[in-house]
Length: 279
Image (cartoon, rainbow, N blue to C red; front, side, top):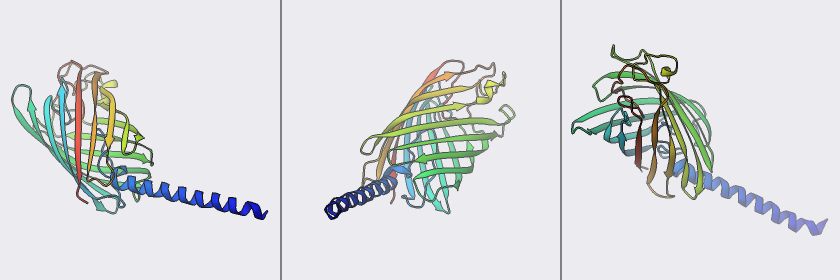
């Protein structure tokens, strides 16, 4: 029996060392990319106490026959701030400057606060939250909205999604608009994650023939997120074609949307983000 003791001791040390390395990697991942900025470009994630708390984001996008990142068909420049307020609260606010294909320029703003009610104390594991916010879109129409967030983060993969319910202060808009999104990413090499994102908006168009925003639209496309270790910067890219799942005879408005169409044509959206961590 004694001759097995050294071998068992080596196995035990190896197991402890491997576990420590995994924990160290997970902790490093959490402080650089796991729950910090915004790995998905069409879903808002919440922040946690064990990750850097404040960051600035710049997002540039281009849309053709789409209602763009904030309801815009053309080039959009978005500047955002995101921070952890404590007690599982996350603040996310942004402002957009849009350049239309016809040469006009307009703006839009949005701000919201989200709180995790399940999880949210560490970056890993499951988190479920509920948020409230206000916005003003490119047509100068104000709205209030509620966002339900859900995510699960591990060392090598993550999944997250949102459901947003919006009430616009306009008689020409729907009583309640629904936008849903989901994304999945897997670590393919070091700090590089790749996966897919899907977005559905105005989904009430599936059961309302006269849906005010022109019908239900869908987007499915690739998603890439890179957060180099020990760097204050992270990078995300996503986008894809926009499909009309249903059509309505009502022309779409300029409601703030992640995807969408002008008229009845299909289109596409490309979006890229650079985030700078203040911690």
